[in-house]
Length: 162
Image (cartoon, rainbow, N blue to C red; front, side, top):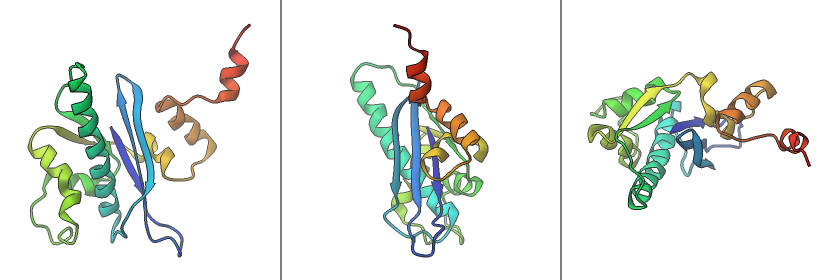
């Protein structure tokens, strides 16, 4: 699972954007791009919100696939491009810099402590979910589009033979 966010960048835009991509066996099975329902005080907080939203969807999919008979392994791997959010998630004790963050966004910390999730760092340049949260240069957009399995329709239709 890959989670990312985009901090609000316009004066009249206060809410950040959450984006996540969930893949199974290299195929995208769920994705989200949505405006966050609250105003964040830091980029780490916006990343924690994105991680929490992605983790909730991942947990739901894990249980659904398990009930359908697909063997699901634990822990689920999560990649995040915010070292601060990873640090807060792995060390969820009372920290001066994160005490303002709502408890519901620390849901991911519980999953890490229970051994259900592992969170690893992914450089921003490789973060496939970035495609869902911000405007990117064409080259990077194309690379990330390929990583999540989306194909350019022009290329697909021109490669078909009758």
